[in-house]
Length: 225
Image 1 (spheres, rainbow, N blue to C red):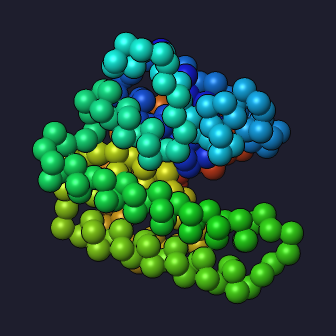
Image 2 (image 1 turned 180 degrees about the vertical axis):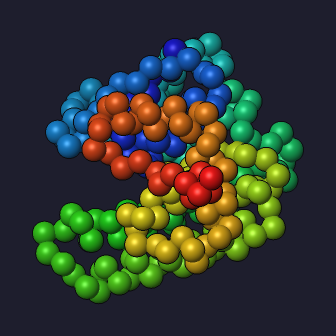
């Protein structure tokens, strides 16, 4: 059984969503970052960058010692290979998934995270920082919108770990000062993922763990029905 060292953040949600999609057996090991538990020596043994999420797999494919991983993108790649799910079997398909996975971990996540920090957590308001990171987040939503204009998911026809990685950050558009009406293809994609049973279960886990953790906005099509 995989141990998921987790807290209810967008990066944490990624791994919970995948594990719910894959049906790999797992258990959650809470790491309350509001109490600085990510700096505990035991956690640092598996996540030396003192960030969640991290996993420990006691039954790796080679049958050897348990494998521990940190960094959400690396974890998703490992789990997709282990489960044989949410990543194409062919090389060209994998290239599509990989580039959009790394787009998220190197772009959308950091830029959105910095924007949220300077808007809500910084000890003083710094207009330049807020404007810079908001503009870059908006640009990245535009990239995502163009990508999704002619395909249902980021890598093409099939849902993949690229979508799993990107969804929790893109779904926070109301927190990130993004007008979702400007990104109709992103909204359609968000609504599609939001109603997947695995997504619902993952966010229910997050709410149970931290009732104050933001939840994705409900699909607007559901509100209008």
